[in-house]
Amino acid sequence: MTWKAGSFAQFTLHDVKESNQDTTDAVSGATTNGDKNKQNRYWMTIASNPDENEILILTHNSSSLYKKTLTNLTAGSKVEVSWIDSHLSVTDGEEPLVCFASDVGIAAIRPIIKEWAGKRDIILSHLDKGVTVFDEELSQTAQKYVELNYDKSTSLAQSQETLKNIVDKYGNKAIYLLAGQSDDVGMIKKFLEEQGIDSKQIKVDDFKGLK
Image (cartoon, rainbow, N blue to C red):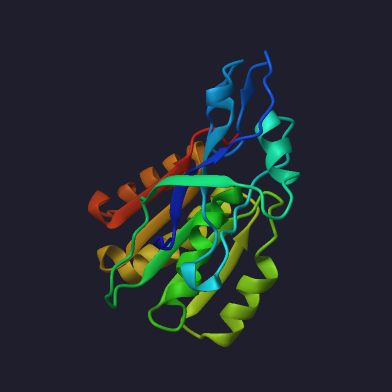
């Protein structure tokens, strides 16, 4: 099994108990009801690369039956992974990568950073909202590679200020990768376009269920 950096996939569990309650997944935004066939599968981002020899996923704590089942799986449990795809694919080239991640959107950006760090200029602005699980790793990677600039922000306005300076420097010569909460990603995309960035240079992976 293989995948591209920044991919997402459908993860199906086979031991999710039935429930009559409606649940909404925090990352995928899929709302389900008592239909067990709907409750046992969700779309999630793969936060690792194939060469790490593991499928790493990042999600908020949730009371959904799916999340409870997922986090209590034992070694050897069966999980079906299908429909692997990516909205953030990056090809070989020298274009700088300008990345914005909101919340757990960092899961989509992390493998891209790991793949391209040291090979091209990369700027990452993370509106973390308390999601700091990869912070130490990314900080160490930025210390190792001068081409990587890692910045954390506490507000959308702060992220926009950071990106404004980057846009002034690179303009449409860069590729812009946006991932995370749908509202945040939409506002950053609009901001970039208002700054003159061609929509063709912007790739988006918005997590519609993330609030």
